[in-house]
Image 1 (cartoon, one colour):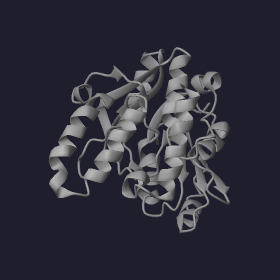
Image 2 (cartoon, rainbow, N blue to C red; image 1 turned 90 degrees about the horizontal axis):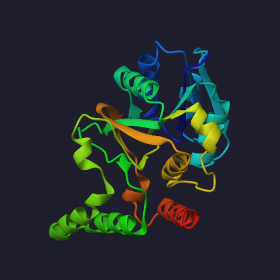
Image 3 (cartoon, rainbow, N blue to C red; image 1 turned 90 degrees about the vertical axis):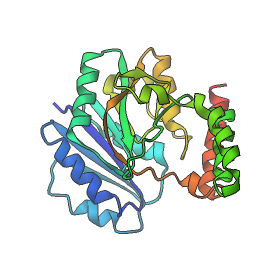
Image 4 (cartoon, rainbow, N blue to C red; image 1 turned 120 degrees about the horizontal axis):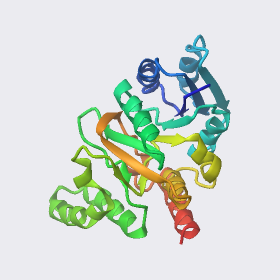
Length: 268
């Protein structure tokens, strides 16, 4: 019986794939695991890198001819998964044994926990706001305004005002502690999910190409009576490639905004 199914999604990920897969293989070596890699039409050397690991029997490779979006590609992995727990993990992560063991132990001890996540750092040691309140139009406008103001050094005073108003979106006080706490949602970079939860709630919403598919899933999980937990006492590295912040008016930003409005309509 498989304990853990790890779903990795790649898309032109040659820079991140080797360190991520090596960390996953080493940190989960003691578990009965499977690693399902879904490539979303990479045009760099990612696919060749993945195929170089074909000697690992626990690795399953699914190759798409084009970018199918986050939700649809991850669903391809989820439907193949056999594990009691399904770990959705971003490819720009470097994980460790302590984090995954602690999350599984916590979920084993807390039957009400449907989804679990831990603290995420970037390589510079900055803590990521990876647990949040549900997306809202107000929070999104704060984020967009801050992204614009960040380009102007003279606007620091206005940035601080935006940050103060935006603080209610996050769980900063709880994140500084060590006690596990419940949240509204955790981002898709790290979501450890019970197989039973997916059987009740269903797959990720494939109408969301790139955007709040993680928040949408967590909301549906809680509607079924499960809790979402964040464990601040364990952590690993996540470089966080947020494309919408890098290019505010890019095509990906438009797709993300379209997905947000769909989320708002869907959940009123």
